[in-house]
Image (cartoon, rainbow, N blue to C red; front, side, top):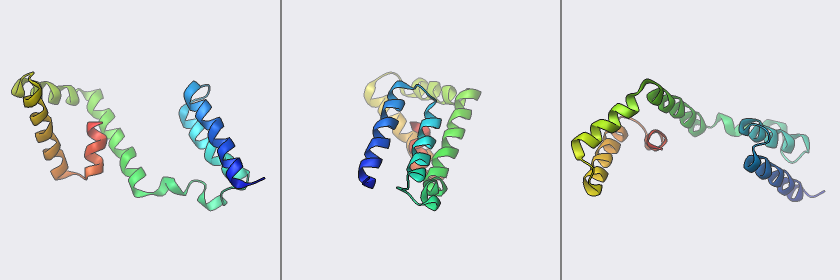
Length: 118
């Protein structure tokens, strides 16, 4: 069978499982990669090669930091301070968020800043 057809079938099954969440999302994602390797679409060395990309590792680390910020209450404290200083006006609040973004971007990568603010 053509590798493109196999890939589309695996993609369709993965999309269905992502939408329905019949199995955990992480298991679905890893199973799709594994299926492509088992079915011979991808060489064994390339199945999980994307996980070693520095951007993927950066995003993973930033999500851990973001979760820690929410768990400790730091994100809420920063949010309340921004609202307290800027008020509830749309333009002032947008300007304050931009200033926070500038401060975060000056000490971390732009990708990390986006991950934190997301």
